[in-house]
Structures are given as structure tokens and as C-alpha cells.
Length: 191
Image 1 (tube, rainbow, N blue to C red):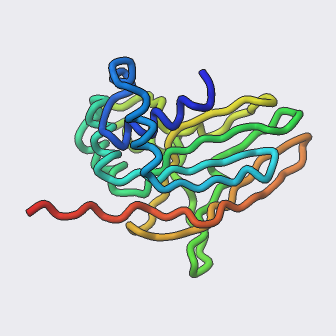
Image 2 (tube, one colour):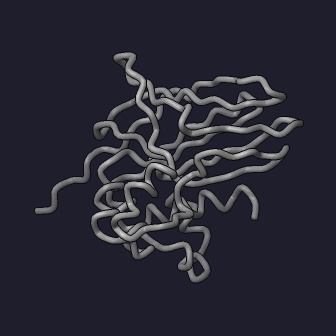
């Protein structure tokens, strides 16, 4: 797999298709669907982060196609969801912990991201005991490694924020900011 896989997965979420449908889908339309989604990237540091905005209808369709229970789908469709791609561009291993990352709103409030561990805890009573779609909560990436998955934060629809994220390299903690991400707007009411 290479770094082009994530845009395809994000496009599948936008189109409401399951990853299995990718084998039958033409990659060009999927890439075009991904290009239509707002995205933000910070590639100025050894740890690159990209967020792709996903709307609640896209998220709902993705998890419905994955067979998740309706209450689990309702829970994740209510929060801001981003397709997230990360990459270690350093010459040494780096580690991260999503629990340390914060969405800082214009009023200066720091909002924690909802980690994969927290989602599994919320979903377990609903019958969901594993998940591959959410970005791993903690991970060590070797040089050149990358990872992908959804990141989520509980903010009102349309909220713009700065993502403050951290990683460790050679035992030293580093911090960077991704300016501009915005939660998707609320879906339009159907007549």
C-alpha cells in the first residue's frame, strides 16, 4: 500500500461505499470525489498531518455499509469527522498519542479529540468490539511509515478550529498546529 490509498478510502466514505467496493470501483471517480472535499495539510515538520472533511451523510453511509448498528452510526454521525493521514518524514521513529491532540476554537477553548479507544468503549454496549476505521490512538511510526483513519471531535457543525498536535522524536516532544480545519456543515433538510 502507498499513500494514495487514503484518498481512495476518504472518497469511498464520501460516496457512501464500503472499502470492498473499491475493487469494483474505478479509481478516477473516487479520486475526483475526494478532491471535492475540503482538506488541510501541515507538511512543514517531520510529522505530516492531513485532514479531509467528511459530512455527516458521508459518515453515516460509510458506517451503514460497514454494517454498524444504527445507534453506533448515530453517535459518530453527530460529531465532526475527518479522514486523517499521517506520515513520519523524520530519519528516526516517532510516536504520537491522539489523546494529547486538541482542537482549539477561536474562543481559545481546547477540545479533546475522541480517540479510537474511547469510541470502542462507547460502541461496545452496542455490539461493536473492534474497528479499523478510526486512526490508532497511539502508535510508533518508523521513518517513511504512514497511517490513516478517521479522527473525530465533538464540536458544533461548521466550527473552524486549529488542530494542535504532538509527537515524540528522540525522546523530545514536538508540537505543531494545523490551521483552518472546519467541521462539515449540517446536512440540508430533505423536502
